[in-house]
Image (cartoon, rainbow, N blue to C red):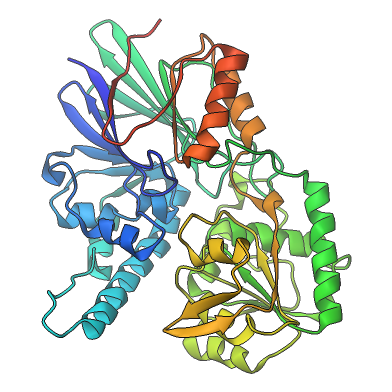
Length: 463
């Protein structure tokens, strides 16, 4: 019986991770993520799965980011009853993120039904908060580097991917008779200069590799240059006497930013600002980072469960967030979503993007079709809730804060594998994947391919 994999998501694009693995008599999923981007693309999240969820035996999840985990509640609602394996810290973060995603789905469906109520079919949410709670009951938290037989003949090992708290490289070993085959999925790999996370683990053996390629076409600037750039941004913003808006992913980027703020508090003149963490989910995620501080380099909390920032204020309620609308200067506002596709950052953009004294700090990847990408590309105006708003704020793109590996990191990570196994590039746009594939082929003679949606590959026997 074979060991094969089919690409059903994040093939030719960055989001919507979904891979169907057949190992002898077993069928399991690696990842089950949301498609993110323009509204037309996101409606695909309501489509039926291209398989019967009730026939899936197990799910393996590399980490908690919603483009990897976000369709798990839908999977459970549609019949999946098996275990979901992930790192214990990822489980803790999913406890926060999936119910929030269910709540957003309900609100989005309600909004669409109000807008198109005249004779249009009723829109149902992809899943609800209740569905998310049901899915969470099927989670099993594991630790790094501890082999676990999750199905007869199939062993899972999670290795530190260095991307966010609990992020894992997935190693799956299939034993069949005297034959062993190993599939390694990178998950999302971290950047070598990441403020908090440990470097990604490098493995020596695999028979087939799936590797993310988000930044396969570029190098990140050194962290020293990024810190100098942020120093200049905060100096300029203080002189302009406006607010600073930071659309930030609530898991990973927010904690990295808080850490850097604590480390550079005096150099950036942060004592002159009110630092506002305007995200209930970001607040809860930061508390999870405190609980699992043993998994990374540390320094953010210094023995407490509060970040080392004396002027940090956690805005938990909608009323707290609305009070910021009255502030036209002196506030650094960190709010989700990281790609400006929803959340409280939209309200802050409405009240600040038109102000010339405002600065908008983009610190993460912005997928095509998102509002964040439009800001990065220099949009002169944006539309929020049907209202057109001119963008007169200064927009800064800080690439060095990425939680993703850059091209050199990816090349180095693959280069650690002996025997140069076949590698399939996933989680990337074509323009990023092509130069990475060319470099892997040129430097290693690697059999490198760009994954194609719907393609099925065989994992060959061990060599």
